[in-house]
Image 1 (tube, rainbow, N blue to C red):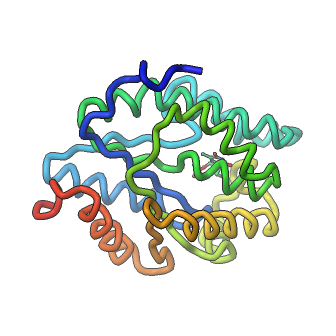
Image 2: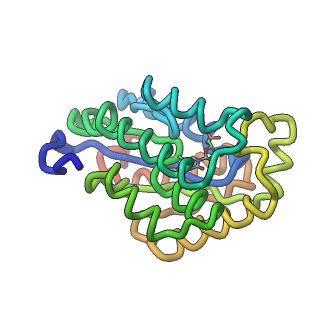
Length: 221
Ligand code: TMP
């Protein structure tokens, strides 16, 4: 494992992760937030998981390809973590060392929710593997877009395109309960947003939370 001490200095950067079930609008939220940050000259680095690097995007293709139907849960977890390890070392750590704001569409908590709860691999196994990828890095803020899975599925009706979108309702219910359990157990980092509200309302909730963790943005954002 890479010695965390050998990773680039964290600097004054900020890592903000976005989580939530499918169809919860987090990708739209990230785009709006990025525009707003752009507007005040705090251009953020936008990344997504799985993926976000050339290697990670190849891993993403394997993970989401409908042809990967036979993938076992353990392989799925290891590939998610592999993509994360690459993204952190190649992009996130260097950006934080340059004091940048990183907006990450899903991160380590997604593996806890999807593989730990959804696939039933358990949180202990996921935390142990995540630790290899994270090397001590934790988000400063995790915005959890909460939307009951059946509503998310309705929004997505026209977009059942990848292997995980195709999972059963029961699977997505377990993922949702995993997210809920995590947000209730770690309120120092998690903030829940009501994703059933209008996009501009969700955006305002997100901005408020961002101001709280980053005082430099208090009067500008
Ligand atoms: P996306 O649709 O938000 O781009 O995410 C791709 C899929 O990958 C989504 O169904 C959630 C899933 N996923 C996991 O199962 N575990 C993980 O660790 C991550 C990051 C994503």
